[in-house]
Structure formats: C-alpha cells, structure tokens
Length: 493
Image 1 (cartoon, helix red, strand yellow):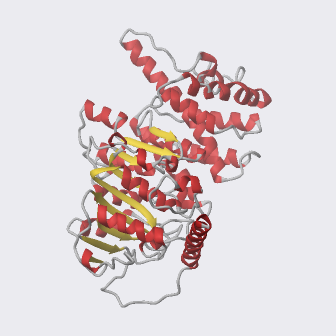
Image 2 (tube, one colour):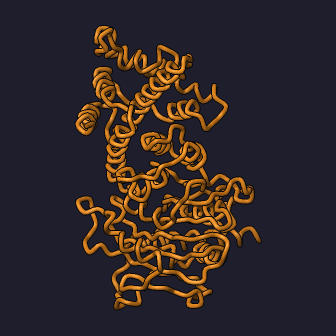
Image 3 (cartoon, rainbow, N blue to C red):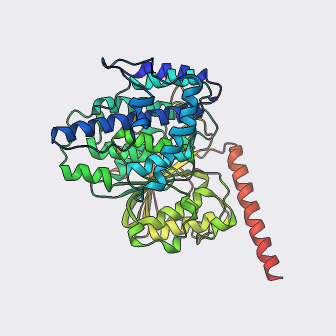
C-alpha cells in the first residue's frame, strides 16, 4: 500500500542538491517519518482521552505540530495549499524554529527513557539537508499520506524502512556497520530462544536489527509478525516488552536515529537506546544491575581504538571488535546467553590479545556453538565472519561447529535467506554431526595458542590462497603488538 509512496519519496530526495547518498535519503526520510509517527500517536492518545472524558496535554506546542506546518488541512480535511509554508519560508521555519525547538526537549526532560527525551536526542543529532523548500514540501506531502494508525500499517512501514536500511548498508564498503542480514539475525535468535522477562542488550546497536527481530520473536512467536496464530500476551507481558526488555547503545549519530525509528516502527514507543560510546565504560565499574540475560550483536570490526579507550579493558588491544567482546562477556549475567558476530580471523590470530581473549572465552564461558558463515554473507563487506554462541559461568567442555554452505555464491542478487539457515537451526538443537557439522572437545584445543580455527574433518583439507584482508589484519595486529612491546621497553629505560 505504501511502497509507491516510498519510491516517490526517494525520487524527490534524488533531485535534492543537499542529499547525495543512500545514507542521506534514509536520514531525511527518518526525521520526517518520526514527526508523522508522533502526530499519529498524539492524535490517537487525544481521542482516547476524549472518550474517557479527559483532556490531553500534547507533547508539542501547537505551531510545531505536524498539522500546523507540515500538512495543514482545511475544514473539509483536505490539504490547504493556501496556508502551507513552502519555498524559502518553509526552509527558514524548519531550520530556524522547528529543529531548535525539538532539540530543546533534551534539556527540558530529565528522564532518558521517555519519548520526550528521544525527540530532543534525535533532533540534536541530525539536520535538515533539504536546500529547496519546494522539494521539502513535496516530500512532506508524500509522508503525510503514510499512516501509523494500525498495527498492520506499522508492519508494512517497518518492511519498507528495513529495505531502506538494507540499501543504505549495501551502498558502501562498510555495509555490515548498518545492516546485518535479517535471516542470520533470526537464526541467532531461534538458537538463543529469548523469553519474556529476560533483558536483551546490544552495545553496538546500529539500526537495531537484533532488538527489532527479538521483539518480533517475543511478540509474535518464531514466525514473526506473519504468524497465523501469534501467542496471546497479557497486558503485563506487553508492558514488559515495551519498557523493560530491549536495551541498546550506539556511538554514531545516524545509526542512533535510524535505530530508534526502526524500533518505533516495530512497535516500541520509546526505545531504550542510549547515544554513547560503549567502549568508554571501564569494565571494573560494571555492577550486577548493569548485566543482561541475553546479548545479541554484530560489533564493528576493523576499527582502531585509542590508548585511553584500551585502558578500560583487562586485555589491551586496538581492535574494536575484541574490546566489544570483552564488554559483552562482562555485561552478561551468570547463566546469560550470547550470540555475537565476529571476523573469522579471531579464531586463529596469533597476537597476544587474540590468544588471551580466546582463553578468557573458553575458561569463563561455555562456547557451545560456532557458526562459520560463507563469504558474501554481508553484502558490501568483504570479510568472512563467524557467530559465537556462548553461555557465561561455566568453562567450555566441547564446541559444536557448523559450516554454512548455501550451495551458491552469495551476493546482492542472491542474498542469504531463512531457508539457508534452517538446517543449522535444526541440527544445533541436538548438536548433530554431519558433513557440515562436527564437535571439538576442549581437550583437543591447544592451550598454548588457544586456536579455534574452523577445520571441517569431513572435508579434504584445502590450501587456498589466504584472503588479502586476512593478511592485512594480521600484519596490523602484529604491528600493534610490536609497538606495545617497544613502548614497554622505553618505559623501562
């Protein structure tokens, strides 16, 4: 129903000089969608209050409500072009009055888990990139045709928004930063099997794909929103899902805004996503109240963190993903469960940090499953990845490996799908051995190297050329190690 509207909106954005990339299209669509959602939410709340014979206090003052500036209507509820701002007047109002007013909610609101605070956060992190008030007027009129009135409409909008996020993720080489394939996320969740009442966390939340899919799983069952017979949840369960289940942190402004909008479209009115760099938190300060039952994440890889950031971690390394893995282990409750995407080179890197981190993982957690993903799983990102499934509180006794092979090359025209992962999910329930899966007891792990490489005993050993990125990663890791040794020697002189 809304698909053509989204296409038309993209066409308007492509003609706008201030918007040059898929990232810009998604960002600008997001702030307009958010304000339309807010207008529909306030309208619904106002009508409910009226039915109860009560008055309703609007979040936004009258001049800044959607119906006042974005889509004014006449007495016949038709768009009123005579009073609608356009051209330079519209740009001046949005940039000079609307955005500053909305930004002020962050200072005027003390509680960070409210929709008022989210308004202030969102509009403090993005700016209007429309330079033509006529293009902006066209875009606003298109967005006004979208409705957030029913769950069905929200579900359709969430699908369309996810498609925009996927396109944004595929637009650049760092696609995995914005978009983790949803079939992979759903398989991870089916293995973890979250339950209502458990707290779920992602410290590198990005577009909130893990939290959105976990919500769909808990709200509608394993088949998601398309389930024919979704579970009947009590009012208390629904409130638990809204307020006390999903928690995330995000460092970058654009993913933060997109993550909030994505969760709203999936049904969470005031997402518990905090705009912060998770790695600035000293792990020594983590208390029991800061721990979670479940962690689902695809942390950024390849980053190089500064020395002051590394000081927050017992295992010092510049590799962002390795710091996040320590963060996740520390933030898991005893008995908590995690599924984390990480570069496959983590399993075999010979630098001190990699070895120490693998030892930490095996000795303090039960690494029960490793899913080896084929190249092309992450569109736009050339690295190979694995998914680590573990529970905290008991050492590893054995690890079950599964080598995913869809039987075709993955790419934009042949992306990963749910059927590709069905065999993995089914076999993982019993840790069944097959041509693609096998078990490695802990006593077969070399405790000098703590090597966890994927070596399928059911297939002839191949010796392909190493991936160039793998070689570069290892050289960089060794360079970091050498610099740290030299700095230590200088400190002793």
